[in-house]
Length: 358
Ligand code: GTP
Image (cartoon, rainbow, N blue to C red; front, side, top):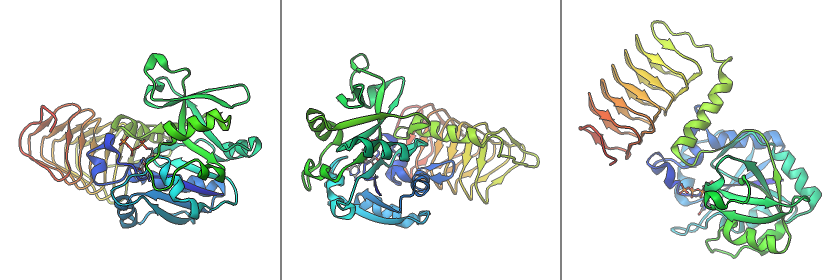
């Protein structure tokens, strides 16, 4: 079986970090999400993955040289300046996928341990045109919500309903198994939404099935979801993570990648992932945060609940507060305060306190 990974969206909700990196390359505890997905595909016995991307995503993915876990990787590229949505890229990849049997489709921004094998087996038994993995969440209003009948057939599917109008709490988990017949449903070279255009058609024909799955499932599409995915994985590291540092304090769970330097009196953790080659000076405090690679954090800085982009330089005594997202290669001068929930665009030099968003 082949897998198609949808990874050509713009990740607008994860800006500004997604301005310089596709969502699927966001590290989850120091390893890009895409590598974690490929690793799970390999464990499922899948040998070939097709990455449905746009030209810019392809550029970043090739530049990064991802670990492929032995999989044969192919690219299917949206036409220039014409994003094909969540359905169009499936049709675009028709030739690469072929018609020999069902295939798996994954959203490239989902961090999960749901068993792909389970939905594949289920799909084969039902001989459906499409089976989607469903996952129960507290607030389904941000997602596509499904109502299923006793035989697992989907009765209705509503994309992003109002909170009180969602028929269930079962959402589209962004994992599908599709029969090649699906290619007859999707127009060629036209932006198409699986959720809004194709699923309703399949429901009318009684051809859409849903399998409720249990396990870990997180959508990294927003900063809070991204931090949460890191925290969930860090939690599982707790016992393995024996870090000894002289004259600095590590409050587990913490993950520190290679060639990271940590100064005296610095307190790191809990819930911190630090990317490689990062330099952290003396008396710094970092908790509940993700620090991407090659960051410099100067003496006395405090980072709480934030995402710090690759290559950023955080000046002396700077305070970066909860839910802040600092873009790649941002430079923050000494003694600056960045208030809660602020975003700073990549490459910006910050010379004044940020009280309002820029
Ligand atoms: P937002 O702009 O923040 O909504 O993000 P998004 O559009 O990247 O993500 P969304 O959750 O809407 O998309 C689900 C998955 O489909 C993600 O893995 C996206 O990368 C992917 N995707 C969305 N639009 C396209 C597209 O036009 N082309 C391709 N190839 N993939 C897409």
